[in-house]
Image (cartoon, rainbow, N blue to C red):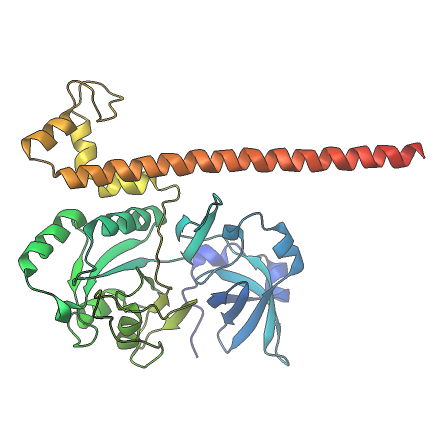
Length: 359
């Protein structure tokens, strides 16, 4: 059976647990989650998990409840094989995005991750602009990204062109060209992620071959996979819930459902990291607060005009900046609306209490 260290436990989490909690609860890691239904792993078993009512009611947003990769303190019931989650420990890192839909809310995709494998495919689904977006969120999460260009067996030719394009975007981030079906690149991935206590998350769009890659890395058919759709060169999405696997030889792997939508969330530093070349050019602008739009003496626009900076890369940078600003303003507006709603509830409650006292 795995030890706590094998599952990713470290002094960072141990320091958060009081002696009283050690006597009452067991540390467990969330290995599967779907709509607040959980599976938890301890050193000797897996357990069906549920949130304590107090914990559920105290959660203000989705980000407050546990997700895959989280460490929790749980009250175990061996006779039932179930457990109640009493507390979620503070996260060491988290890959987050804005939740899909209209609500300005943070969603934690995977927690306490050391390495992020950003999986794309090198057939017609290849998109460097999407990789830039993933890289921004990966750097913001606190994990180290590795780009995996999967399905090399389906490449339509022109390998050197897309290799150079990806290298220009990656800017020092390791790139592994792989084929999960043929086994290409798998040993390079294993050597990077197979270490005791290291947690790796697999992230990517739907249909890039993540499930096949998980099966190849874990060494068994854990994930259902489907054939590629030849009319648009995309695979069909199969993974429906986040889940965590222990790898043979050490290491932990988190698989996530394919993302059809990936909006930024509080990723300003991540965007600056991905576009460090543009940030460096901006230091040469005439005005310190240059927006790189129409200002005279803009070093960034000059680099685009001279061909030193690719126009589509600059467009991507501006797009992510605008999106980050929009989400920040929307979140601030939602927070103000929530405070106003809570204020109204408190006022209504006070008026009701006043009426009852007058009776």
